[in-house]
View 1 (cartoon, rainbow, N blue to C red):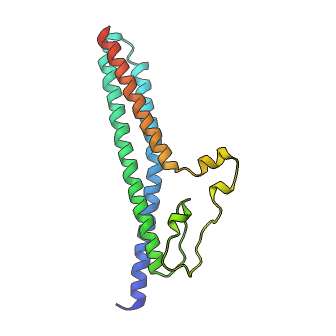
View 2: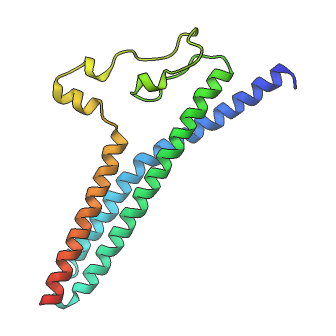
View 3: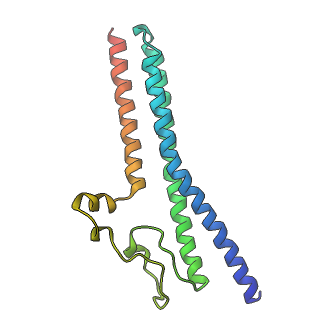
Length: 174
């Protein structure tokens, strides 16, 4: 295969990996919103529309659905994160293969900047989050946003389970 054809193939792979990275990143952020809206709506609906005490089991069924939906979307978010990381890794290696500058894709510069050939300048923001702002701002700037949102979904799931248990105990004892 001639060199020009090989470069065309690498560029096509790069475009495909970049588009997949964009899609997975977009889905990662949409999943959180979807989980909060659906679960919140089901929790509100279970108490706003099912008011009779003897229908506690219907409320529990709605809360169980909210828990299953939240768990499923949490798993989907983690999968999208895994594939986004894989595609970012592939893009970095394709940039090396094409002998071009690497593009920064995360705030963890030290980890991402590791490369055998440091001769080429890179597209990096050398300023670290701790170089800017007060301690409060620095604390949040250094954190991974998708991990925080994943933990928020875990908290939402814990709240749903707690409401489910309390509702069941009150329903059974009344």
